[in-house]
Amino acid sequence: MSKEAVFTMKLEPTLRAEFMAAAEAEHRPASQILRELMREFVQRQREGRAYDDYLRAKVTLGREDVRAGRVSSAPEVEARFAARRASAAASN
Image (cartoon, rainbow, N blue to C red; front, side, top):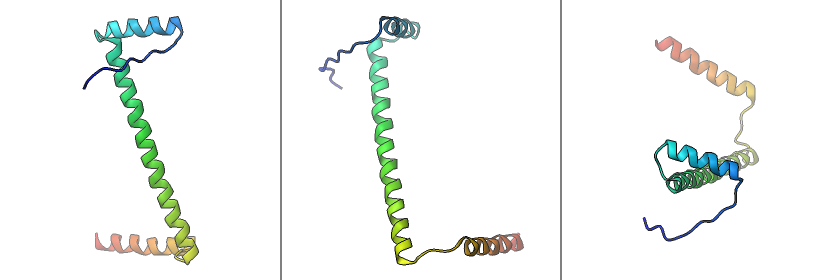
């Protein structure tokens, strides 16, 4: 991948010194580590947005089910799963 862009940033001298020392201890260029950190950050943001979209869709579907009357009470759900557990226990 071509590295044509330059990124300049301000940071505390102590943070820079500690970062440079840590990079040197790893025998890696600071720029390589920063690129990795940036890629990881971008990936986490992408995954977070994807999860938010997924969750938003699930909530929307749930609300549509409630509006359409496709719901079960807690006792109905408990009874349904008690029957499933009993059936599974009987087949073992």
